[in-house]
Image (cartoon, rainbow, N blue to C red):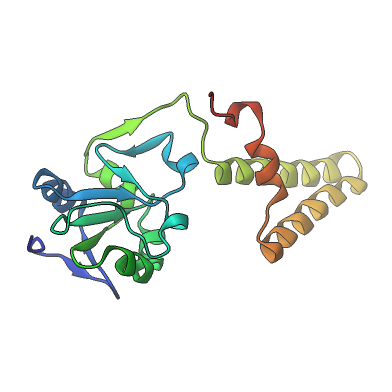
Length: 183
């Protein structure tokens, strides 16, 4: 399949607009969401497949030899940053969705939603950490300066998570009752 007119080049893969991607899908292309399962569970482009970026490692999504594949994430940043790995896994006929899911929605294209699923873990971490820092600052300012230590401890935890590559808050939140997937 020839690329649609107006396709932009990236370092490794061409990008397509949401409208171009939808047209390509009508002609047999496969739209593949590379986000992790918890990120995709709540909202995803209608008709998209799933192959997490963490599992790409040389093996791309299953497709026919002539079937084009379009990779997407939430904003397009993750796919752009990993274009080389996606190109290696997918070979010829691979594209990136410019702007990801957010652009797909902005274009008015169909989205599958399951509002019963929790928001993704990383957003839960951001909300929790932000709330703890804010609480530490407010309590330190209005109750007792010792509460500033809460914000300091959260900052230290974030630094440790960045250094180690392991986030204790994410680990704890993933075990929370609202994040458990029913059997």
